[in-house]
Image 1 (cartoon, protein in one colour):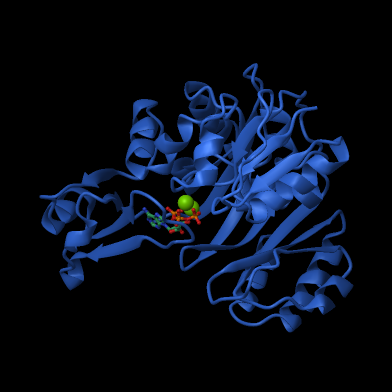
Image 2 (image 1 turned 90 degrees about the vertical axis):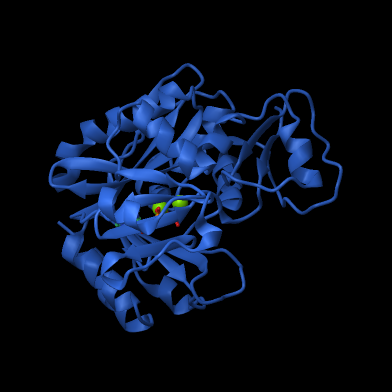
Length: 355
Ligand code: ATP
Ligand code: MG
Ligand code: MG
């Protein structure tokens, strides 16, 4: 069978490769900085682990391939301005916003969006980087280097954050995982839990929203939708045209995980609804070194990305899945005594949200 090339060789590429292994598929994550001539064949397939990339020798070769799935969709979703325009065009709920132009003023932002406004850089932001708060009480102004480069969003006083991960095949068939509840600390995802019965009533609303987007974009593969829950209403925060951190729990908790589903879809292989196994939780490892004593905890699965540890950098994650809630409680207690701050907060949040 042909090879599947992945633009990018970070942890998502590695996990796509890992998931495709049992199917006997040849998945090749490519470091975008490599100078090598890639032996791309005409019937190969190209996908990406990131939505935005610079033009390099490697990305130029990959982008020139006729089987680069969703190629024209990436730039539309990688730019927050066009992403928000898509959401508006499809009349889906999102945080009220406007584009920050050369002549935009903070007064306009306060008058139209309220006294707290979040500017987000149009490109390249992740893990809460590329955000800038405008606060009327502090008379914050828009710095010059944000003009023409950002969108401004109303501060949403949400109840909680949830996300939906879905997959769409070439024939338009779509499957979704159960909604995931997410905890962000300082703009970065720390923990996820799914499935939760108390979120089930929001599932149809979420599936309709993401399904509409995937259909409109004729998207093939896995896409994630991050939402704010305000009462019984979901507002889209942002979209990711790729496998997503909040779907990592599916490695432990679903018969087909998000990585395998993405590969199946881009390769044109059959999709099927995933069987969801028990209760899953995920904890991101952010700026902490690996401690192999963790894997002595029953039910715990460790993914270590072999990256150098820096403050605020995602360097791994932990999945836990069990049908015994006592077992999960015990695992969280053991982890809490083996992990540094602010993990006490993240682990307490998971405990609180266990059914
Ligand atoms: P990611 O790593 O998920 O790609 P990102 O840097 O692209 O993150 P966002 O997802 O837009 O950024 O925002 C990060 C977090 O900041 C959100 O998960 C949420 O906690 C908070 N946030 C974002 N937008 C708003 C808003 N309009 N009002 C209140 N909080 C917000
Ligand atoms: Mg983002
Ligand atoms: Mg986000």
